[in-house]
Image 1 (cartoon, rainbow, N blue to C red):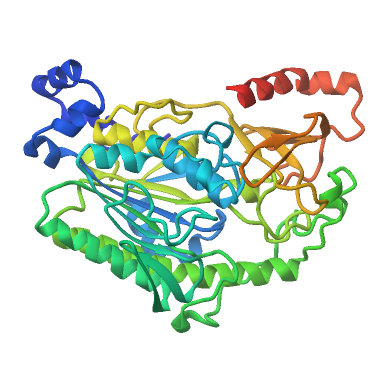
Image 2 (cartoon, rainbow, N blue to C red):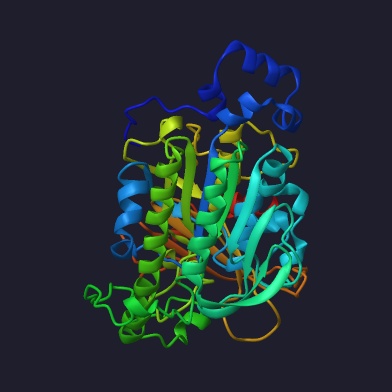
Length: 467
């Protein structure tokens, strides 16, 4: 990681002072945060968390304003991942700082499995933050049911134009383009900071770039840079891949179409991010607002014939990931090459706010110097049908990736059943094969597996899945 111009500090270090340290020691965790005086509350940062939908990593063309603020003047994480490449499990990991096998939301139908007492919004609201949600929440969440621990909200029924919303407990149709509506609702929430002295948390979740990828009218048909694919689009020889990938039918033309549609929807997100920056500047809150931008999962553009998410290949779990907090020493425009993930977002926010969670978390604060050598990425198949990817888990490092597929499925509650038997395995040398074209375990001998270190990787993967 390139050094910041300011020394990196955690929020506790930023707050500093013997009195603050003594108070934190005497009354740790939430009790201290919730009972701190107005002066202490004012020193806690505001939090702006932007989570886009199905946004793969290679979409920065559409985000020049976002990059100019959050990357060029903040931190760009080059190895950003999600721990489950599917909407609800990923968003539950953002909220809880935990892997899906620990928070229980293993598929999009299991949103109610999340323990709402373990979420970052719960901790922040209990600690005196003003909390707001604007956009998508969790798949399968009943629209009429208010999202817990948000004081103000405009909850979107997913879609792009003329959708139903739950606005502070009232379900109604709001006509217009949903990204613009989310932008305006967020700006109104921010405006209240002029008269409300409490620190705030805004969770902003546009539907872009999810299908059907309807652009704002002014961006419909906008030319996008030409794209000629990559070696994995589509992979010509998939004989070493699992059956569902052998049977995949995505083409380069499919990938080009999906990419262009995604980029056009993201142009409106970029406009919204610029509006947020302008508003924070006008309010005098730009310096001490922690901003995090992340995709909830990636998406395939015909890689290995696949035009969706849910797979262990890099395009599905690698996502754009940016952070800015000038007052916390993250405003200089740095590049961070650590392996980071959505499970690190809640620990980062709570660290910045000086809050100790009462529930365990799998992630670690990005404000610390902690660096992992690999990440567990996991996905569960819902139902017993033959379509789609089987259940799998993967050991992901910078230079290698080892994946196991299992005889396991989940029901609508996220309950797992099956023998657990390993049905297929993949190993990719990412240093020499970044496009994951050669599965080194296909027809490998026991001696070749030993040379690749597979027994140790399999043991580590098993331990991660059980942790």
